[in-house]
Image 1 (tube, one colour):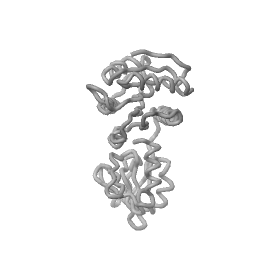
Image 2 (cartoon, helix red, strand yellow):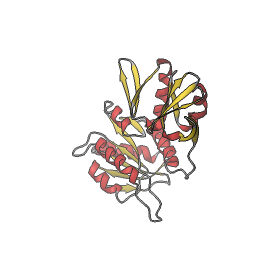
Image 3 (cartoon, one colour):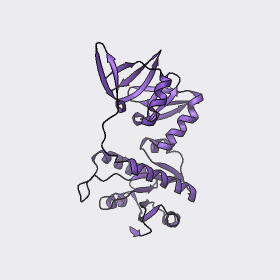
Image 4 (cartoon, one colour):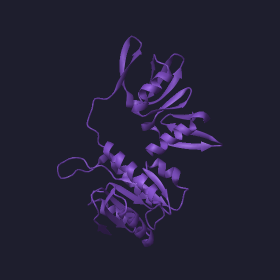
Length: 258
């Protein structure tokens, strides 16, 4: 493991068991103004040890490596992310953004499930690496937003008015002139057409998947493709994406790299 100080920017950890691949990535990073200090590790276990002592913004992670695979390391980082460490000032330290760098396109679906920020195929082009770093930087800036009151929507339940946190809504189903909101606690009817909610809630991470449904991207667990159909899975439901909306859904999922 070694470190090569560059201009200030993102702190990057390159993890690859092929020395030539590491050298090529260091060369690309040296030419990218977004990259700052660059660390390298020859396997996932060495990378894990380094991450215990160094704060890293982005991990450029190979998948197929001896002992522990890149997917296994990413899974560990994801499991640890809810219990982020603390810096010297007591502030929480965000988990690094993971960008897979591999010659194998097959694990892309699993990488998506592990919330990888991007998926680069070798040989890596400078413009694709720059785009991956831009995505990682944007995600880093929004990783620890200032605490704010949750956005809530009021719905009628019998004779009572219930306030539901918008981010607790997993998906929304068209129900005539109403919309049925699906949450862990149950379902609620809101007097508003789906088209109106689509416009209002897009900025909060909701995405229309079908003329009769809309999903909260924060609750998407899996995306599968079967015989030309796209299915988006949230807890308790599997929503089909209409053919007309497939390009839009695919683009939004690419942007977020859930």
